[in-house]
Structure formats: structure tokens, C-alpha cells
Image (cartoon, rainbow, N blue to C red):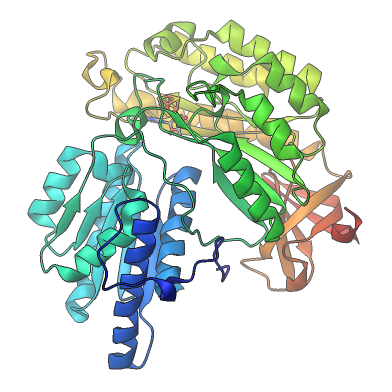
Amino acid sequence: MHQGIDLDINLDKIDINAESPAEEPARQYYFMAKCRERVREFERETGRRPIACVTTFGCQMNARDSEKLSGILEAAGYLLTDSEEADFVIYNTCTVRENANNKVYGRLGYLHSLKKKQPSMRIALCGCMMQEEEAVEKLKKSYRFVDLIFGTHNIYKFAELLAQMYASDKMVVDIWQGTQRIVEELPAERKFPFKSGVNIMFGCNNFCSYCIVPYVRGRERSREPEDILREIGRLASDGVAEIMLLGQNVNSYGKTLKTPVTFAKLLQEAEKTDGIRRIRFMTSHPKDLSDELIDVMKHSKKICRHLHLPLQSGSSRILKAMNRQYTKESYLKLIDKIRAAVPGIAITTDIITGFPGETEEDFLETMDVVKKVRFDSAFTFIYSKRSGTPAASMENQVPPEIVKDRFDRLLKEVQDIAAHKAQELVGTTQTVLVESVNDHDASMVTGKMDNNAVVHLKGTPDLTGRFVTVRLEECKGFYYYGTVITDDTAAQ
Ligand code: 5AD
Ligand code: SF4
């Protein structure tokens, strides 16, 4: 893990015996200082620093939130580890599909066994699943060994909640129903020194009928462009070369700001930051993808030639029931327009099978779009009933064996197409940002091309964080083997 936080704060200058400040982020710095004092006490008693583990479930937004949790723990003096045999463990949960919740319950059983061995261990849960009343009731009733529960809207208060948890011998639960608030200037501990996610907005207003996100992440709120650009500038001067702009629907960025700004304009501004070489973003909603954005992508030197554009279904009838606000035809037209403007762009997608009322004909429409578009890759999901969403109370739920059969056919099709498409690049020369030493072979490193494809290379660990020019030698379905031609980091 990258040691060093994005902000310089001197917590030792804060008087923790004074009253806590009311304003943010000063209030959180005060509680970070309090937590640090507790950490020092722990050190005096045990001769070591306390160890904390942050485990992330779910999407890129959660991954970025976890970096913020880690930043706060690091500022308080904790050592961070990936092992759950720690003094403090926090699960940042997801609830987009039922199995995400089940995973958390399963893992909590394991944490309980660890806590029985080491009763001073503290366990916290946060994130989307905690915004569901049912889940929190279940935890309160049957998982009494959990020490702290909070949700998505008050994550900025983590330092304060941590202090509260240590001061209490009861389970601390703090869940908000919503917020308009965005607290800037909190620390974050990046997983990679050379790349970072950057939140540009929070929440979602789309209410796709199957989706729980608008209920657990609240209404759409955009950060001010100046705050975003300041963060990007700071990341760049700290060695970050690749950024991923994050939001549930980045194409509607800025619409609710006092002075509205389009996502395309924000990208143009972000591109001006020296040191940033690659800009990615996700997720885009097809209904809001503007010509202006396509034009900016066409002329950009830094925006990666990759677009993640969730299809969800290829049937216009199902898309209507999903409240997606586009049709099969308009989606296909949009793809044509993007490909004409940005030749060679990689297009990836999300597809759900088994939405209520989906017939074989509807499913074949989805297969038809898959064959026509030829996605570079696709995440395929079995529809999962999320309580509280309109789709959950639709009567015509599809029997599981039919969904499974469709899912298998869909998966085979998307995988075959993806493998064929990937093959087309073998023999070409590409720029790769090396991200890590290879998991299976220490004489190799692994990186990503600008279209997001993974490449394994012979190379030493010092290549990590560098841009290299690579010849793609072989394609193994979803990833490549390549050889380094030049290390071009210095050439930028
Ligand atoms: N069931 C299955 N998949 C879902 N997704 C969102 N909600 C559900 C659900 N209830 C998928 C969508 C979305 C991705 C992040 O998760 O495809 O794009
Ligand atoms: Fe969910 Fe739709 Fe919002 Fe995406 S756009 S988070 S699928 S409601």
C-alpha cells in the first residue's frame, strides 16, 4: 500500500483537550488527533502499533471510499494490512445484488471466530448494505459482536465514529437517510502511487427499476469543478499519472451545480493538468451521453479509448420496464456514432438477464445487440431482486432455471466475441502502464493498456508505475503477453 496521504496535516498541533470544533473538516481532524492519542497509548501498553484492515466489496466508488477510510486510519497512526487478523477490521459493503450481502454475512462468521481469540479486536461495517434497514436490524439482532455500523452519507465522519466506538462498550450505529453535504479536504491513502480514482459526483437520480443504488447512495450531488481540479493537481504533483473520474452517471455531472458545468468541460479542464497522462471515467449512462462528450473524446490526447456503456438489456420493451430511457435502436446508433468519432475505441458493458417479464424474444434482442456491437468485454449479471425497488414487486419474475440457461448462453457469446476482438490486437505496439509484479510469476509484471486490457510482461519490479511501449505477442482470451520495446516514462 502506498505510504503517504494526499494531504499534509499536522495532527499534533491540535488541542484534543479543547472542545471539538463544529465545522468540517476541522472537526474530523480533531477526532483523528484523538484517535492518534489512543494509538499512542496502545503503543505504550503493547510495544507495537495497532493494525487495521480495510476490506472492500463492490464497485470502484467503494474502492475509492476505502482509500479515504485507510487515509484516516493511517493519519491516526494505524498500520494497514490486508490480513483480517488485525486490531481493527472494517468492511466497506455493497448491496447491488443479493449475493453481495450474503458474502458479508459469511465473512462476518470468520471475523467472529477471530474476535473470540482476541477480544480486544474491533469490527466495523459501512457502505451501501448499511443503508438497508433490514440488514442493520439483522446485524443488531444476530451479530452483536460488531462494534460500529455507519452508512454511505456520513463516511466523512469516520474519525469521529472511530473515537466514539472506542469510548463505548456498546455497538455504535449511525445511519443517515440522506445528505446534501460533500466534505472536502479529507485524507486518502492510495492503493497505487501512480493512479487514483477521483469522485466527481455522488448518488444517482435515475431510479432504474431494478437498482437499489439511488436508495442507498441518495440523490445526485456533484462536486464543484474547482475542488475536483485541485485534487487532480495535487495527485499529479504526488506522482499520479492516471486518474479515473468516478460517478454513478458521470454524463449528468454538473447539472445541479449553482453554475452548471458539463462533464465534457470538466474533462477538458482535467486534461490540462501536467503530469496526468491518462484519464478514465465511469460509469456512463447511454441516455445522457452527449455529442459534446464524443467530440472531446475524439480530440483528446489523454482520455483513454475506452467507454463503459451499460446496455442492461437489448429489448426496448424491457428497457422501458427498467426505466432506462433509451431503446435498442438508439443504443446501437450511439455506438455507431462513438466508433465513427473514436476509431478503435474499446466498448464494454453491463447486461442483466432475467429481469421480470423477460421473454425468450426479449433475450434474443439482447443477444442481437451483443452480436452487433461486439463488446470488448461485458459484465453479465443474473437479475437480483432488491427489496424496495419497483422491479421487486413486479409479478412476472422469471423462473431461475430459465434465467440460468439464458445467462449461460449470454456469457458464452460475450466471451467468444471478446476473445476474437482481443486477438485482433496481437502483433500491434501499445503503451502499457505497469501496475504490479505478476501475481503468479515474480519475473513478470502486469499492466494495462489504454483500452483497459491487461498485459503481462517479462520485467523487474522497478517498472511498476512506468509507461512502457510493448509489442503484444500473444492473447489468452482476456489478457495478453507482451515484450517491452522501450520504457517511455521519461519521454512524456
Ligand atoms: N440485479 C442484477 N444486476 C444489477 N445491477 C444493478 N442492479 C442489479 C440487480 N438488481 C447491475 C447493473 C449495473 C451493475 C453495476 O450492476 O448491470 O450496471
Ligand atoms: Fe442504478 Fe441506474 Fe443509477 Fe446505475 S444509473 S446506479 S443502474 S439507478
